Each structure stands twice: as C-alpha cells, then as structure tokens.
Image (tube, rainbow, N blue to C red):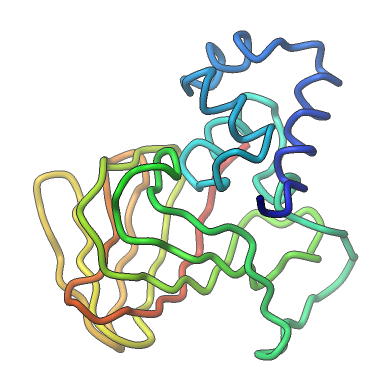
Length: 190
C-alpha cells in the first residue's frame, strides 16, 4: 500500500461539496469504481482521471497533489524531487502499459496554473489513449519516446520537444526497450 494523501484529499473535497461517488463520476466522466479505488488508495493516482475529477470539483490539479502551499517562487533542488504518483496507465493506473513515475517540480507553489513534472518513462505495452482539457508541453531529457497524437505518431529523442492540445486523444510511451526521462508541463483549466 502506498501513501494515500491524494485519495484522502479527493474524498474530503468530494464530501465537502456534498457529492456522492456516483455524482462525481457523472460530473467528471470517470468510472465510479475508479474514483472509489483512488479514494481508497487501491490504485495509484493517474493524470487523466485526476484532471477530469478536479475540473468537476472546481479545483486545481495541484490541490490534490500538493503537500503544502507557499506564496512566491518555489525552488526544487535535484536532490529534493519527490515522487508524486506512480502510474501504469494514464487512464486508470491499472493497465499493462509502461510505468510513468511523476515527480512534481512545483508542489509547494500555490495558485499555479501549470503543473510541471519530471517523468521517468519505462518501456511497456501500449495502453489506452488519454484525453482531457488543457495543453501539454514535453521536452525529452534522456532516451527516446513516442507521442501518439490523434492519428499521428511522433518520435522524439533527447533535445526534442512537443506542445499539444490535450483534448486530442494522446499517449506518451518509451520508444525503445530503454527508459526515457522527460520534462512535462501540463496546463489544465479549472
């Protein structure tokens, strides 16, 4: 069992708005079972459903992911990176796809509009495409990735970057048997 701060915050926010799991599922377009599993800490939190859920709750993605909030700039030192979520799939966290390990680069910044992450992309099988509101920017630091975007697939290597609208179905995966490391900045409007 992993730390379930995200699930506990999700449950608290949902209950504070007087919503049942089923009502939140209907508002967010997420399966009620996924919400229940997230709240219970039975599956690792994953980006696409969290974006849909936070939008339905009227809060920022960072509200669920942050440990604390500070005004002004936030500096994150290389040796201080904290893993925020371990994912096996961008959709549910339970598919057989390659694992993505997200490390937040601005966990303490309050009222931010962007979510910057350092992401380790492990090789694995393809998984369902993700779609959510917002935009994403990815810069490849090490290794090679493929970004499936709509009907196109873009191969990127260290030094390459891509910026896209997240509403178009997409998937990020390792392009080889070697892991890759990317810097990703996600903008998810509330």
